[in-house]
Image (cartoon, rainbow, N blue to C red):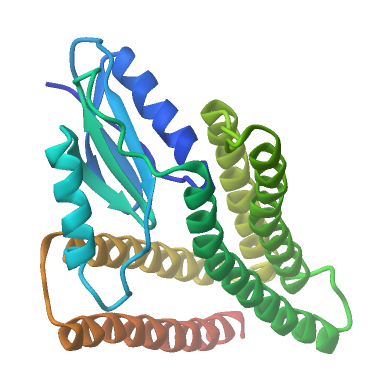
Length: 292
């Protein structure tokens, strides 16, 4: 039985688009079998209709397992109604059924709107503030050098673009949702094909910007310094991927105490900070040695 994996890059307010995508994949002969932190895994099947429910629920604490009592009760409610639980990605919880007559389990549009706004108001503005702080740090560094035509200038442009894109998407959806709720008592349904194209273009743009930053920072450096930088970035990316999958697995499959989860998450965070600090310092010293 062949498998296919696609990226799970969907915002909270794109839950209906994810639902449409999964149902379209089923009609093409691909059934969702696993939801990861980064990827959706499908298995081949006979093309047939499958109903999906992508519910927006309160996200568990960063220190709590996804196996909390309220989530267990909701899953039991859905299972009693004929829906099977598949998994979660952040605030999005996915259920499915092959019974076309099963009772719908989605919440009403007004309640879903409130849940989406509560979820996005925290994550969106936290991300924007973080990006702005990083932009300010890069702006100060560029000011010290007396020019924006360097790696710091490119970093500022990248961070500002990402912040505006991330916050702007939610603000546009909220404006449309208010209007459709007032006029039709429904929420706007986004086209998943458009979302996937935009996500691919945005990801490609980030990669191009990163390459530009790396290239401009390494101008004048020796080839050995470039190789060291490339290896460091590759190792760091692999570690980030590994820890992302590990945290998702710990929360989804295991039920640890709050204290244990705090130790795990803070331990991982401190390790990454230490890696960035020591690795960055080593690269700086190494590049200076190789240059002189």
